[in-house]
Amino acid sequence: MSKTVSARIESKGNEYVKESIEKGAMIAETIIKDTTANPAPLGLMGFGLTTILLNMHNVGLFGISSMILAMGIFYGGLAQIIAGVMEWKKKNTFGTVAFTSYGLFWISLVFIIMLPELGVAKKPSGTEMSAYLFMWGAFSTILWIGTFKVNKALMIVFSLLVVLFMLLAYADATGSHTAKLIAGYEGIICGISAIYTGAAQIINEMYGRAILPIGEF
Image (cartoon, rainbow, N blue to C red; front, side, top):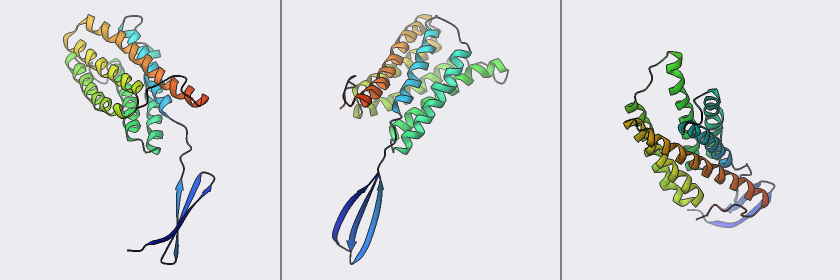
């Protein structure tokens, strides 16, 4: 096994060049410093705004229109997928799985609504929608466990999200209007918590200090 005789690290812009001499041979290793922007606020805003609008429908303020469907496809869907890909480049497994998955959740929900209207597939039954929502609740529980290593604000977002999915699953399974109404108001609070968490990351980064606390662990 060769032994390192000497080593040095030089900073060259965004690259760090590490050189070591082993048995008289010069070995250079280039380490790229990540200077890309934080994609989490984009994903959180896309999730938060779309969640609020859908749950405003659930509490009966308006029906399902092209406004909700378009938000589901583009801001709730594509924006979160883009954020997930950006998190992947940062080697953030949690962010990659969360944003990509919820982006695809919104797109899948839009298709669940649209396909019966287009005559492509039948409308899902209450039991089928309950199973769909329950599985997303179970998935969210897994991610919720991971938030205990991130910050309290994100932990609250996922806590509310798990409850939201389970309430919606129960409402579809039983046909309970009351459960759906409660889920609607709880979902609005969940969306607001996601917007707060995203806004905090934006504002705190801009000002260089914790203007909006997120409870770092």
